[in-house]
Image 1 (cartoon, rainbow, N blue to C red):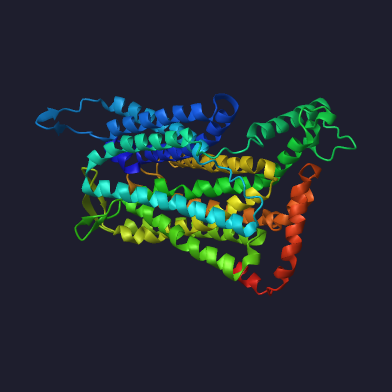
Image 2 (image 1 turned 180 degrees about the vertical axis):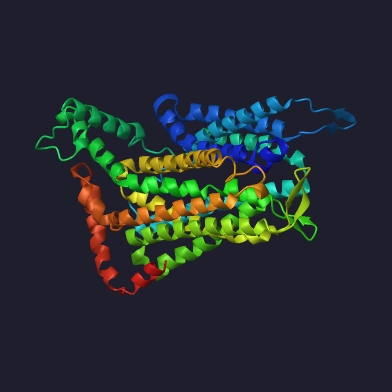
Length: 516
């Protein structure tokens, strides 16, 4: 989207980066709200039909905007593209919005965010689930980016018209699944609005009672219980306490996501202004994004073997916290290296390079120099995403695990919008110097170094609170109340089964965690 917005639509670099980040963030947020809308108001089948139509409409409008932007021929007829620029921009916005809405509804129903049914498995099975879940998602993304690369390289823009066709094929497949009841019907358990209501009710009750706590009240949230003047059950209040315990984790994920999402903004701009010509072959920019995904596709099976076969007892909280810290370090290192390469790129003489049908003046530094920063950021995603998901899933009771995953997704989406806000603030405060429209006339490296500093501060903040997420089974056993007695007994039983086997491993495994 960055090359299309800057070269074809004439956007500034800052505008293109903000639009791209907002599109990604909206795509993450819509499944959460679409799932709630399906459960409360519209129903699953009706919402799927509406979202399939919106998705097809968005892909059709996107094809109209993307192809053709110049005059073209249909047989012997010369067709003139007479769509004004302002109308193209409006169609482009409408297309992106409808695609986000349609895709969000489909993802919420067909592939729900909460992995229900994993509570009867141990921590090894859960970690394996999330490892392979993200592996399959990124395999799909790699295929998509390679397809985009082929279109960019061959200049066969007519293939863009296949997008509405693929949307139609997806709609027919989903309708077939609906007709034969092949779509998984998840249980309606915890609700995000219920947890928000508990917080609001507790604040109101506390304000009316001047924050006076009774003897039976141990927390401000207990004011929301029915027996204390609120309107929620004890189970809902206890579930909300779990979410508040996870709040620091979600906040640090927000800051991490804000930095990691600079791949589709700053990194793309840096690649566009580097030499993509490799011995006469013009490398598509989308290949660089595929390169950033390759570490996950390669490392995920090895990490699975490492933690399953070699050290199966260390797949719990301390190992997950170490993975998150290591991933953040790789992300900070990636952004720092990007800053150094940006300084190095300016020392190369300029050359002219065709991009999307236009001739641009770029640096003669080969784009292969930038591979390292893409790879490091891919390694960071490999370590961080599954670990965050496992902690978010295991730190709450089984009744609200789907809601916990929804909250994690919300913070991921908010991280994209925070990243867009950061780009806008940096652009305004530096007067365009740290995020320039012409990279050779600005200091994009200062923006990268600033991001690296934020990531290092995020590491220190997470390390200060990581101890509370080390012993997941102990946390659950202490906090799950009588309403979830069966789950508590199951956790105690599993702890007894694994107690003896854990003692077989020597303390030298701590060296592996320290190295990680």
